Each structure stands twice: as structure tokens, then as C-alpha cells.
Image 1 (cartoon, one colour):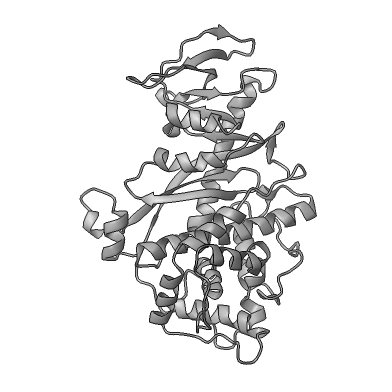
Image 2: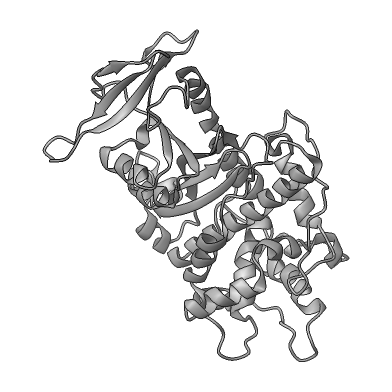
Length: 412
């Protein structure tokens, strides 16, 4: 999709548009320097575009998808140069110089920073974040379109069908969402043809015993279930109706104990699970029957009727993906990078920007004693884009509680 050379108004002020202080609050300079050293990407000499600047630039791209790469850099450098000492200011550069600086940086520092700092943020005070003693998480995946370059098409691939020559290359990614805050964590991406179950093997490894993970039926496999169980997390996953689940013992809440057999042709022990089956009123086809399997074997810890209602909280991840792909990135925009390495760099920058917005909203919700679901994501993005008199050298001690209820007809 063509990108017009949009610019910010000529009389714009840094205090009108700078939101780097919000990003720097959650991704402080000292952590950026650490990942640059670990990845061997720290600038060895003073450059026009030092490595730490380009890390923040990758995140800034996610805030300003509708403007040119040079304009994003100009916006960013206003912040860096505001308090810089004489002779140490960073200067604007041409598009080719920006690309070279991004290539020097690569994807590894962004990936390290993302994996280290993008974590669940909910506390016991966060409304709607827990089911009993467990923090609610959901597993899901999606795709994103990228610039239609030869390199991207070769690496990521395109959707099949008659319109393949006209479609954009896409990559597939899988992540966890913290249901109560809409924070997306543990994101992993791969070529379009990579299955979500394959990507999910890396994602479920980040679960822990404090969590309860929800997942759709298309994620179930014996191997992935075993890997998730090994983390100590509790699981409530939907499975396909054709999966054989013999009833070994009926329970008082209508659920029953069963066993998951190993895949055909493989040796291994059967896994004991509890099965919850229910139907949706008003639905007449096979989709009306839901079959959930869970690691919570005692119905007193999680009654069947509660698990049936809880499973539908999984749709919170659809709202989070909509925030990421529609309201932050822009519905009609593709990731602008033309090289696979830079696509991944841009993706992790985008995920960290989404995290910063959502973490800010969570703090605002705690301050106002509100449910984060009741805050408008669209409003928060607009606040972050124009907020405030802080820069990387001086990140804010706490975000202002400016987020408020948006029009509930507007997607969050």
C-alpha cells in the first residue's frame, strides 16, 4: 500500500507530540544499553544515528505509522537533542542513512529488550485480571502484512489463491494476552506458512504456576499440551469434537475425568484431564457443542459452569489484536520495512509500543480504581502521541491519570 510523505505541522512543538518519555518509562535507557552490549550492537564510535537512538526509533515507528520515516526521526531527535550537550546532538539523516543505521542495529536488541521487559503487569488490585487465585492469560495468533519487496516475499511468503500475485507478503505470530490488561507478551513470529502450533511451543514456555491459560481448539496437540502442563500453569483449552475422550469418572458438577492418549504411533503415558461439555443456546449446528479440557481436576476449585463462562474470556485477545493492528498500526497500513531483518525489528518495536500504551492505561486504571477494560485504547494512543514535556534523558516518575471512559461504541 502506498505511503504518502506525510509530515507533522511546521510549527509543531516537541511538547505537543513527544511521547518518548512514556516509552522510556517502560524501556529505560540503561536497559537499552544492556541489550546493545549483550548483542554486540553498541556503537563503537560517535555516529550520526547511534544504536540507542535507533532502538527508540524502532518503537517510534509504531506510534507514527502514517508519516514518513524521516518525519518520525525528526520527531524523535527533537527529544534526544533537547537536553544533549553541545557537540553531542544527533542530526537528521536521509532515508538511506536511516536504513543503514537500522541494518547495523538488526533485530536482536529489539527482541532481547522485548523478551526481557514485556511482562504481565496485573496485580491483585487489577480488576478483572484473575480467576480465583490464577492470573488469566489467553493464547492466540494472527498475521500481519509487510512491504511487498522481493526479499520479504521470499522470506515470509504470501497467502495462496488466485490473487497471490496481488497480495502482500505476510508473517504469522503467536502471543499471550493478559486478559485483564490486554498486555501482549511472549510474542514470536515466523513465515506465513508456519503453523500457529509450531510458534506456540516457544510462547507456552513463558507460562508459570501463577497463571491460568485459555486457548482455542486449533492449538491443541498432545505435545503442546504436555509442554504447557510442564510449566505448572493451569490450562483450560477447547478441543475438537472428534477427539476421543472416554468418560472414566463422572463428577458432581456435570464434568468428567478422562485421559488424553498419545499421538497414534507414539509411545507415552496417557494424560489425565477433566472434560467440560456444554452447548450454546440458539446455535443449531456442530459449533454449538463446546468441549473443554482442563488440568484442574477438582470441580470444587473450578466448577464446570464457571469454566464454561471463563472460556469465553479468551476473546479478550481479539480486542488486543484489534488494538495492535487497527488502532496503533492503522487498518490500511503495512509494516514499512522491505528487508526481513528489519521487519522483525519493526514488529518488536510495535509490540513494545503497544505494551507501553497498555501499561500506562493499567497504571491509570489502578490510580482511578477502575477496570482497565473500561478505558478507551484509542484515547490512550492519542494521549501518548501528543504527551508531554519528558524525554529519554528524563522519563516520568508516573504517568498522569488522563485516560478516561471512551465511547463504548468505539473498539478499545
